[in-house]
Length: 145
Image (cartoon, rainbow, N blue to C red):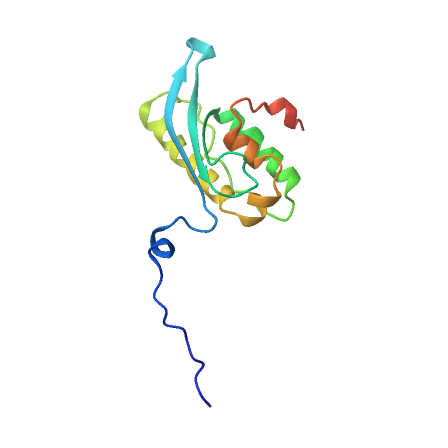
């Protein structure tokens, strides 16, 4: 039995160094704490780069609070019964505005979001995903429970 003949054509420059066919990168960065006393909160910049047609923008940058991530996760769980949605980093009740706590939470939110956006069923089937990572006017009340 003869082995199948394989093509040995060299890849073109564009095939090697061009953008991948479909990519979706997300980064959570630049935490900022706002307010005073009991009204203090921290939000995070969510940067998205993609060429997936379901996303309106190739590049976007929005700011989200932890509570926005909580609501987003609940909406994802309701709309995506076939996909296991990963947990968010836990709630913090002491020293929640210390640099270490904020950085730990930022890392956890980024891990969460990278898992979510990396799931093919969510990339194309979720109604809330593109809006959450791209719409600066995202409003959790429009995705009510």
